[in-house]
Amino acid sequence: MVHERYAKRMANDPRYSFFNPAALYAQQERQRAMLTTLSRRGVVDLGEVDVLEVGCGDGGNLLEWLRLGCHPERLMAIELLEDRHAAAREKLPSSVRLVLGDATAVDIAPESQDVVQVSTVFSSLLDDAFQHLLARQMWSWLRPGGGVLWYDFTVDNPRNPDVRGVPLERIRALFPEGIVHAQRITLAPPIARWVTRIHPTLYTLFNALPPLRTHVLVWIGKN
Image (cartoon, rainbow, N blue to C red):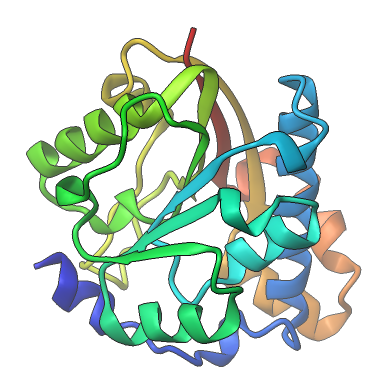
């Protein structure tokens, strides 16, 4: 089950701490790519944007949106796990709406959101039918002119049977009406952890080689 697969993940895994240069560089790269993507879509004043995140975890991405200028009352998120929902609620302003539960069963007004963000969620959804159901729900929440902001890995992890990569062709199949703009980012985490132990700046050097990037940041636009 999805709930069980998520529950297996360590909440405080040191591999993902920002004190780990590999995680910090990847986060900074993703943030730059996100801002570039939004600006190219004409989104420059985040105070005028309604954002919903599917699978918000402990609220890290929502804090990022707030730092970038989003108004808390225009932020919303859905989280499946009770402990992570509670952690997010503790961190975030009370005016940020947080919903505990299955995103496919949440009552959200159609065409009420400018951005629907989903980060490393679909790679944990191993049921194709459920992926399609969630994608349809997300698409229905978007206003025309908005988009899904997607970040996930595209290749399988042979050490983790609880996840699978989501290639670009699959993303297009999930959102057949969307206009897809994608960029490959994020140095493969095992390589990133290895090279940054030698020196943090080696992340940028190795990441200059596209075959070593394992994730995509995608804007799926709705006309």
